[in-house]
Image (tube, rainbow over all chains, first blue to last red):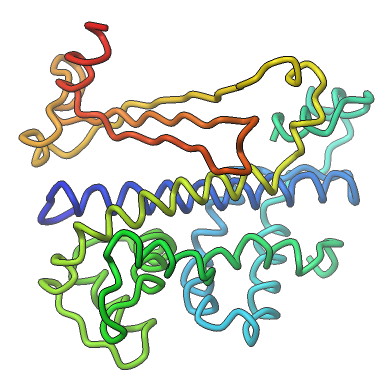
Length: 111
Length: 185
């Protein structure tokens, strides 16, 4: 932040919070889908880091979502692919818990 | 990764918020949009969210050039952007409340949890303390000691049972305000 002012600071902080909220919602959705369909876990840190790298594509694609839908989808698929946790034989505590019949909300909270 | 079994609709559902008509509606309400030409609320919202996220060095100049980049035909100086910050912060605050409600609506249906149904209201409250650059100490006085000279407390309250109405309260609290109003209560 160069020339800092109260309103400038507020804009930046609210902007960051909006991004965090939306990306967390997106992560939770994708996390649940990936586990249900492929039994793979996503790393939240990796997801945010990789998504930030694609934020420029995200910003330009948002100008016309209809036309850029495929481009956006490819970017997200790439982010998801690079954010998957490595496969391992020994189960994590989270994976052990997920074998039990827990309500979906608990799965969401674990994410 | 070629096939993550992920529907394009899932991603677009959340991403579409960035182009939502809601932004322009809120902008009119808070007085951000006064005329059709010039910086639009949609551009302002995108630049201060995803745009700022992609920048490594955030200055008014880089943000103004981002606005020109994504809004065709726009010419915006940093001074002009600076003048929009007052109404812009109100717009972003309103949009944040709307975003939290939107995200909650698209997550797990918590109404199904039987135990919560016996309560009339369920509030999720969370807060965090954010250290700021010393330049802001006149506006957001810090706690002193090991903390920074400037700090702000962010408090969020969300009504889970009434989330369809988007009941979100978010406050940026200056520390002296916190001491005076909250601690003395």
